[in-house]
Image (cartoon, rainbow, N blue to C red; front, top):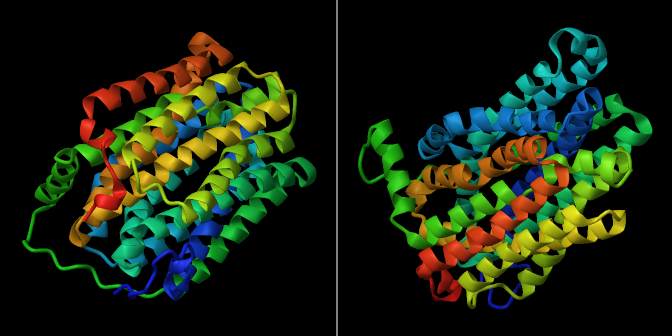
Length: 418
């Protein structure tokens, strides 16, 4: 059970919780490793294929298994010890990293017979792991943190994730560029394995009792109905989903790095890290000045600003300007992330957190991978720069549509939530 703290005006209150510190440290190292792996695999695939669509297929290979089991994973997170799920899925990430390391030695010969399909196959397993990890870790964090610290924990959770998302890609690109692919994958194995130490030593929290016994399909339907019956939740999730789906340009960064900005894997690492760097700066600001007033309007403006940054990035031919625009996009994006995470925790009953988190993961989590596929497909059909301009424009249009169709979200204030 979460500890109770006097937290008025304390931006660092959640760090007084020992199990939060352990959990967030483990999540940092696992995220760091995953972000490293993403850059390494992306450059590896593009180096082998020189095809933007092949980069999009990386996201699709993770999204398909993720979507296939996401709702079931949420059901499991409400029935099975959440710490056990976290440890098991983190172990799957470690094993997958070890397989990618092995394949990096044999890939030159394997590519001649099987192409990059073996790489997609391993990434598919990480998609399965992520489907179970996400609802379990979301529900677990809500159990070890008191309710009055939800906004504070969401802010710091986002901050730590983005620090890993800055340092992971940068480290992956630099190690790949200077020491080669084998050394890069060895680091992924090490950091993902290191995260297990922290996950193992966190407290094991009992699963909240459920009021009634439900069959699996009834249980899944309950979680879906809960989200769709709340205009604020549904609007926030849909806004993030479509914003990332159309506005994300991350999957195409290897192409921009190589063909537009004329840099190598080192430059790619910095490009990948730029949005997260902006998100960290914004998260540190929001830790002291949380967006509890006019939260809905701030969320809409932030997603709109994100879309505009993506359009300008597509038109930029300067490396440093591109980094600046990506960093600014990360700042806007993190405002939306923190507001959405806070209202998800505030609205959801303990016994439904796994299922609601899984619905959230379908809306938001899968949009990154599906967005990668959409980006690759659009680049193939429209061309690189026009496809990203189109995506950013669609994001702005979605913000305008959401503002009109979800008035409760537009008028939402986190401070007034009970």
